[in-house]
Image 1 (tube, rainbow, N blue to C red):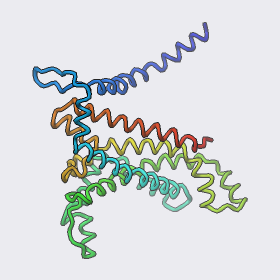
Image 2 (tube, rainbow, N blue to C red; image 1 turned 90 degrees about the vertical axis):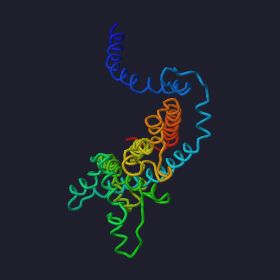
Image 3 (tube, one colour; image 1 turned 120 degrees about the vertical axis):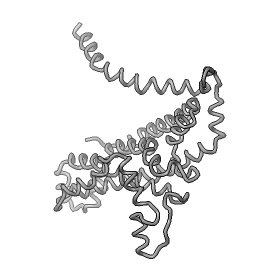
Image 4 (tube, rainbow, N blue to C red; image 1 turned 60 degrees about the vertical axis):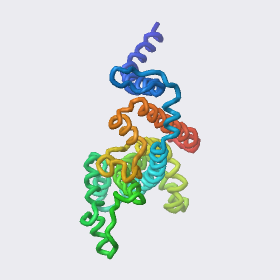
Length: 291
């Protein structure tokens, strides 16, 4: 009887979180999957079952493939650089140096700024003729360039904005992980004659793997969910060169009012994120060392 009461008490404690998770995560995902097999209701015409027609249309949609390709390049450009820079900054501000508190604040400041504000700041940097970047390049005698209006440079400019915004956020997790490493390990390594790089590579980096796994999952999710800077800076242009998958879903759902096709694209996005998370857990969990 006591054991049954303890189990009931445990489930009651989990009930609020389970209700929220089901109501705002599982149910919307299931409803989106179901809606992707129907047509978009318009006026007095209700939605009808169309099967895989929406998915077939997606496969034949060149804008979808361009947005997906852009998103993959965007993720490839932001994830490793953001994580590497965050780890480097965390190691730097974790050491004993003058102005350490100021450096931590400076690195973390972009994180607390809304992405809309960040986009407007960098929009001024990239403005042709009188933007800050134009002033710097002009000082070296380089010609003026429309950074956000050229297909070859627009995606790279968005990658830089995202790295600047996210590296400080990831740094906080690495800094907390570094401070949790016992100082005795560094003392033992010094006694054995191990150099700093060897100690970092053989001791610190493996102990940071749980944090890296957590940060990597968040970085992958962020690379597919950030759209605010695109809305402010490029609106997907020029010629869809900066359109990411979530922004294309936003356009289809709220500008073209094709909710069924937007649901289809959302299902693909959820499948990509789920596959990436599972792959990270499967391959990185084996290399993760927990204290």
